[in-house]
Length: 267
Ligand SMILES: NC(=O)c1ccc[n+]([C@@H]2O[C@H](COP(=O)([O-])OP(=O)(O)OC[C@H]3O[C@@H](n4cnc5c(N)ncnc54)[C@H](OP(=O)(O)O)[C@@H]3O)[C@@H](O)[C@H]2O)c1
Image (tube, rainbow, N blue to C red; front, side, top):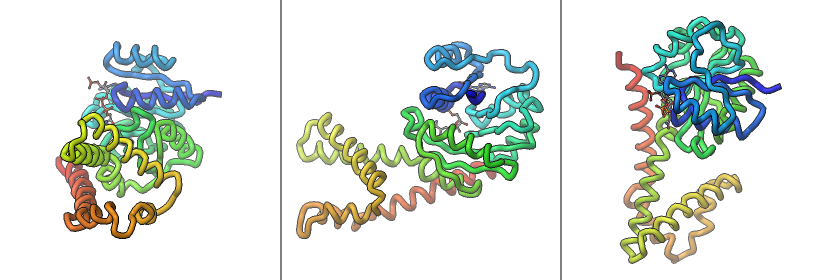
């Protein structure tokens, strides 16, 4: 039997999840968005059902996934509060919004999973960190794992680490874009046509990441393997160490984590 899932908000993330669940199969997906056209378009592409007038009666879904902007939680709650099945799982991807706030807004005292995916969800290659509240039973966690596996890699953690997830993998694509851009500029500086440099830089980042993932080897071991004594790579590594590449990235994750936490503390 297909698992009934309601996705609220058909923007970047809602659409990615709808497409991912469609590709994974085994889900009966309903989508709600305030934009009728956006909702219809997504449903036509994925076979999901549009749910324009969702305010009537209790919801029947096993999971409701909130994919609206954090400031729209109140609006969603106006329609949804008190209507979620007590045994249903509420999944929230609202940045910076604790599970408690979602429970209070929806008057839902049952299972909640909070997740922080990243923009690569649009290509089903997200890195997602997620946490579950105490009301989550093993079947709720299995359901959440299936949902986020449909858009990439999903890892459990605790809620107190979600700011760090935001600082690492949430904002991380932007750091890597800067690396790709800079490698490209390096190629251009050395006389390469820009398009060629860009393609080589992009594939280098992708291929290097795939090697780490597929071999399971520590990146330092892989780095040693391509570092010939007295060769070109060690000269570049020396330069990167002198200029603090690693310290810079560690600080970047720290700074973004602290910023993420500070946004929530504001009234
Ligand atoms: N994008 C990312 O990389 C990313 C990563 C991690 C987490 N997130 C989180 O994911 C959530 C969604 O992000 P997104 O980039 O997908 O946003 P988005 O593209 O703006 O999508 C949200 C959609 O929900 C609609 N909406 C607003 N109020 C609604 C309501 N009451 N009922 C139903 N639909 C409503 C929005 O319409 P309008 O356009 O009219 O507002 C829009 O179509 C955010 O909370 C964000 O913090 C995003």
